[in-house]
Length: 306
Image (cartoon, rainbow, N blue to C red; front, side, top):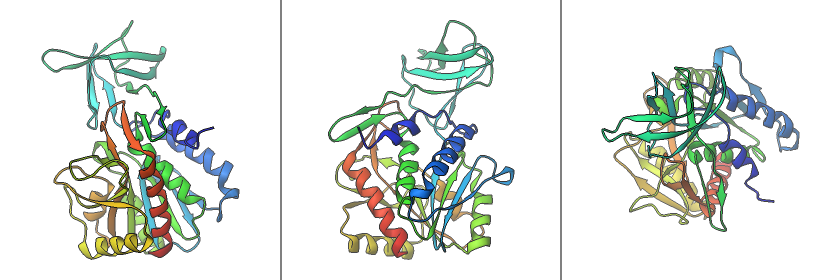
C-alpha cells in the first residue's frame, strides 16, 4: 500500500476558497483518530471565533507552521458562466465536480474563442455553486501527479511533522488562494497567547529555470514579498547544518500566507518552505517524491531547532 494514501484523501476533499468546512471536518476527524499515537497529543483549538480555521498546539511552542486548506476552483455565475476562484489554469475538457440543490455535479469546462470560461452539463447549475477539479491521483516510482498538491501537500507535510512534534503550533488557514483574510485573527491569537515570532509557510512553489524537481525542498528568499533577511539566513544556516537537500528560490511574483504575516502589526518573521511542482494550478500538478521527503524532514528539523 502506498505511503501517500493520506495525501490522496486530502486531494479529494472539496474545499475551494471560502468553503473550507469539509477540510476542517476531515482534519478534526484525522487528528482525533491519530493524536494518541503521536509523540505529544496536541490541544485542538477551533470554534466560531476561528471560522473554518484550525489550530493545533504542542508543548511549549516557539514556532508556528501555517498551511492553507483552500484550493482554487470556479464559482457558477449565471446560465453557463464560470468565475475563477484564485488563479486556476483553464483548459477545455477539464472535469469539474461539486454539488447543488439538485445533487452531485460532474461537468466539463469549456473555454470559448473569446476566452470566456463556461461549463457544459445536462442542466443548469445553481448560481453560486463552487466547482473544483475532479481528482485523478497518479503515482509513479518518482512522482505524484494530481490536482491540489497546492496545498494538500503542505497540509500532508504538517500532519507528518505533527507525529513527532514536541513543541510548536500548526495552523490550518483559509482563503489563501483568493487574497487571504483569516491570517489577521490567527496571528493575533498565537502572538497574544504564546508570543510566537517564528513562522514557516508550508506551501508549494514552482519548478522554474533555477528550481528543479528532485533537487530538494525549496527555501524561498523572496517572492512578491521580501521576508526579513536575518531570519532567512538563520533558516538557511540550520538547513545547511541538517544536511537535508534544499534549493534556494528568488521570484518576483507569487505570494502566500507570508504576505499577511509581513503586513500584520506583530513582529513575526516568516519563511516560505515547500516542494516545487510542475503544472501549477492545473489538474496535473506534479511533485517529485524526494522533494516531499526532504520537505517533511526539514520542517521536523527546523521545528526542533528554531
